[in-house]
Amino acid sequence: MSKPLPKTPEEIKEMRIVCRLAAEVLDYIEPFVQPGTTTAELDRLCREYMERVQHTVSATLNYTPPGYSPYPASICTSLNHQVCHGIPREKALKKGDILNVDVTVISQAGFYGDTSRMFIIGDASILAKRLCQVTYESMWLGISAVRPGAHLGDVGHAIQRHAEGNGFSVVREFCGHGIGRKFHEAPQVLHYGQPGTGIEFQPGLIFTIEPMINAGKAAISELSDGWTIVTRDRSLSAQWEHTVLVTEDGVEVLSLSAACPLPPKLVTGTLATATASTIAALPPAPQS
Ligand code: MF3
Ligand code: CO
Ligand code: CO
Image (cartoon, rainbow, N blue to C red):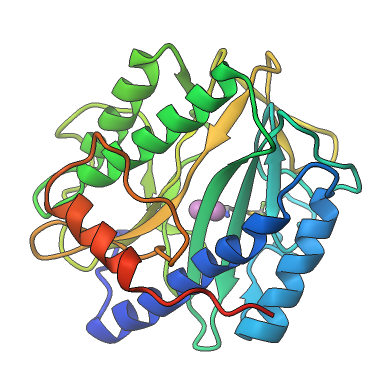
């Protein structure tokens, strides 16, 4: 993979817009994530919202990396033991399920914004809720490690330490990624690693942080649909994703929206306060 290039001020403006749009798809779909709804219905609703309300295009629909068949849906829906890239299905969600919805949109200007959240259907087991919370905290601890002069390995280390410290494991095969006019660019952002290793952050870099954390072992398998990734031991898995920008003095989360969750309590300082005030000032996502 080539060296990551910092974005220009104009590119950063466009990335702020498209990442917010991706987050607003999640705001829009949240009320529909209920027992009895199918993930195929969530996919149809998100597609219509992107196309009719936002005038964005799903980056995942027909996405065909080398060696893959075209991805058949406008969002990814990864349920319970599914780790990532779950294909929406005509099967009803039920109370106690945990679901990741991952949205990547392409703006009219041609930029990509990528973000995902966990949803708990009705109520879930204590383990399922703890897994979702620890994964959310792990993502935010990774984000907190981003600043000019820090290294990629600092992010992976912060995530791995928190996930494993809580008895969970980190999926190794999938990572965060640079993003801009392309869906996946340099750098690869591993969710495990050693402090001080990997490239040094410089202002203008934009990438995702998207840890996949398993309740059981880290090993995964791919289903015969060619896309859906599951835990090999069929234990629960959770994932959260934000797209972030390295600023002159720290980090800015780009995929914020009016209804996105606030940073967790264990993140404090300027990042937490700046993020909370940005969220509070955002207008609600337009409804269809
Ligand atoms: N949005 C995913 C990511 O975070 C990629 C999904 S690719 C798909 O990188 F084809 F599975 F949709
Ligand atoms: Co994503
Ligand atoms: Co991503």
